[in-house]
Image (cartoon, rainbow, N blue to C red; front, side, top):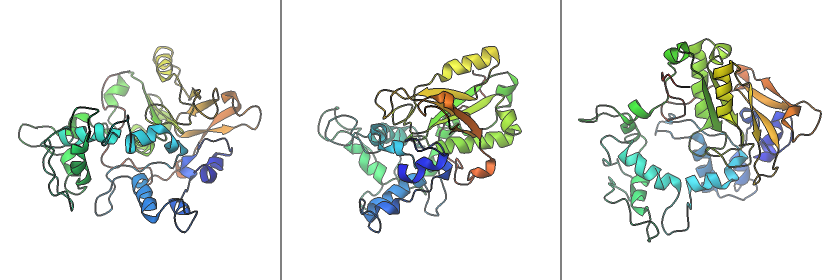
Amino acid sequence: MLKECDGKDGLVDGIVSNPQACRFDPRTLGPQGSGLLSASQVRALRSVFDGARDSKGRALYAGWFWDPGIAAPGWRIWKIGPLFPAPGNTSLNTTLGGAALPFVFTTPPNSKTAGRPGYPGAVITTAGPVPGLPGLNDAFMPWLLSFDMDVDAPEIYARSGIYSQSAMDFMGTRSTDYRRFRAGGSKLIVYSGQADPVFSSKYHIGWYRDLIDRSGGVRDTQQFARLFVVPGMNHCGGGPATSQFDAFGALVKWVEQGQGPSALIGTAPADTPWPGRTRPICAYPAQPRYTGHGSIEDAANFACVAMRDDDDDHEEHSSGGNGSGHGNDDNDRQ
């Protein structure tokens, strides 16, 4: 990914700051390429990064950027584990997703799935043994593996009997109706890790572009809401990224002094390839570009350059119909 995409932002520095220009093809790692991956592994990788789809190929959630931050432990811990040394399935997708999906995001809770061969109509009867004992969270696996995107995914939006609201009615953040929020003078900063294995930056960009469309354009939207995408960063932190930044301080300054941030200054922590490196994390749709003078380890030698709307692929970065990003709708919060 670095070889294919790193230089697309004009500087080879271990950071993919222009992911929209990245055209990485995992087939280059397959049997017809380097041979590092099998054909089935290539298909799995492409499926994961393409995002959830139903049997007709319709997107249920956004795909993911090809960001080298997926090599960091934060990606693996979520996707395949282990979260901690113990027998059984301990990835966060299993320990958290395995519990939240059937009991919180399905209406009615823990109803039968449509099933797949080997897992017909799986129902969870136990949440698994005490942590540390053999088989931790294995009880979730048949349910997860039998999940049907045609039949089960719509249950996220379902209502039934005493469940007068669907899970997405009260937990979803897809709305772009910020009229009352904006009128009250509130400000919103959203940040997203470009290598977040849970919530996709493509989802957040798609949501923000819809907010721009509804709010009268980029300039009007940035009067009350700004989005910052952090290259290389995993879920809320981690990864090869300048992931230490003060978003809250920037929000306070915006609210109290009226100075909206054009960029957050991020610092790379000690466990990255370049400890102490600083970079501007630019407010979308701008991206950082090296000015050509001074150290590439210093944010002062970079400028935020606005990207034209047609530099991005709107369909590719659509947030899709599902998903829960950050940024609640119509709440008077700062």
